[in-house]
Image 1 (cartoon, helix red, strand yellow):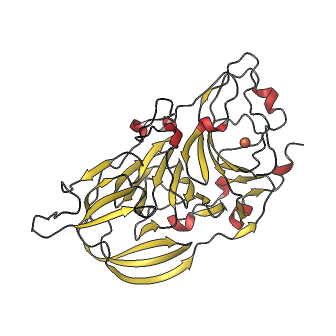
Image 2 (spheres, rainbow, N blue to C red):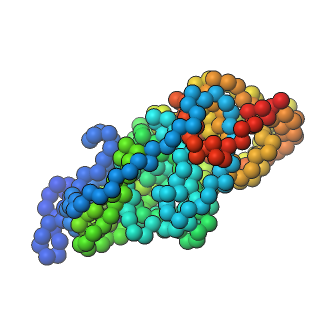
Image 3 (spheres, helix red, strand yellow):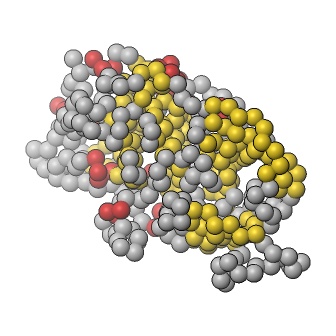
Length: 384
Ligand SMILES: [Fe+2]
């Protein structure tokens, strides 16, 4: 995240002596991505962050492909994913490629008896239902409906839910997730035309520091395996840090829509970018105001992008039979567009209340066995 952030206590100079009240040294850790070239933070720990005590079970979380080389449009009924107690068990990968994974989850319980660390991917967790607190070794973030939580790879976290009724839409990215470059000036500041600004980025303000010894289980995700590692000290033992690599929250309700006289293309909805996909937010907005405008989108052929739309709330003007929690997949290589009647229905309408998250991937997605359990197999014929 290109905003400098400081939390807790740090020494004036990096890589210099920083001592505890008893005179002993704190343990410094540089925590970064893309070698030493990407975002990084410098954190100061009560104990060495390297105290591995035991490596226990290792098992695969790799999604199983049901349909590779897919060209069929699908609709997936996301709320049919069954709630499960455990956070990691509840996460079902629906679509994936070598760049990203698209996951639905309905966890009932908070993480209590382990910590989680994803070393494979940044996680963008969209909160569709539920509220609570994301607790990380670099500080905590309260969350509620409509929040995106961006957890860079390697952040150790727990998640506390206020109730058992939670629905999450998660995107895992093997490349860092950034705010779009074209929204930023050469110093990284968000520009005036950007649909949000730094004030909308919620950074951790609360740091949990536990100086404890014992057995602390971290479930580490690496190359689609979960590896259970036991550490001798509490993973949340940071007394302070500064830098650019930390978790943050952004509410979809803080996204300011960009509108025009005629239909605006999807890039106006862009919220995040990576090298390999984009994430867009469709939010309540005024429709196009040219007297002859057609608010519904035109048919379009995303010849080299798979388009995944997750429907969050409101009415979905361009689709018939879409409900909250549904996902549509319109694969690369074939055109798609409004359902029969939707174009005509849209004429004369002045605004929409729709809320949706779109992920456009630049490489094709594989459809998983978990996806097929909630798939509408006839959706691809729904334009006839
Ligand atoms: Fe589209």
